[in-house]
Image (cartoon, rainbow over the protein chains, first blue to last red):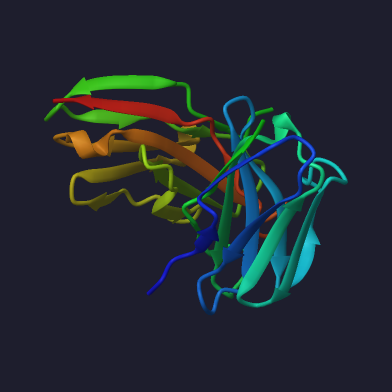
Length: 115
Length: 116
């Protein structure tokens, strides 16, 4: 079975540009998570969805960040405008139905570099 | 306060040595889950194990074993006869019922280098 799919795997952009990261969760999973990993702050949860509805976006750093999940098989994380401090690895993860005890499976990540 | 502490930032061992990665957690919840993830140099996060707070049985999977001790709030991970492919950053994580579904608190990770 395919795991969580993320694209692109690497993104290099210039400050001020819009960046869109994409995620396809594992089929049948109804929770989807976006994380950011940096050397300074480690792994941080940005937002998560349940059945396509955003449940907790308290980790989203600021209004420049937005996330959507238009259907069960696709989610985007958008940064507009991007800044150098947004450079990080962004992970998407998904988990099975059944609530909080289920394991989150991570995608390969998108390494974002903002120049 | 840190909910998950991995005091060992980096560990180096020679191939075939055993190595234990420490994880200490903090929670007031009686119902919680503990996890270990592996992040190899390629960057992905690979799930290794999940334990719930009601099951203190140790677990062994091949060369990997986990020791869960509620008395010391620890969930340590041992690799027996380490191999170069074990070189990675290993993260311990905690989720609690009281902080809501799916809130995974990660430790800062331990970078393991296995020297051939």
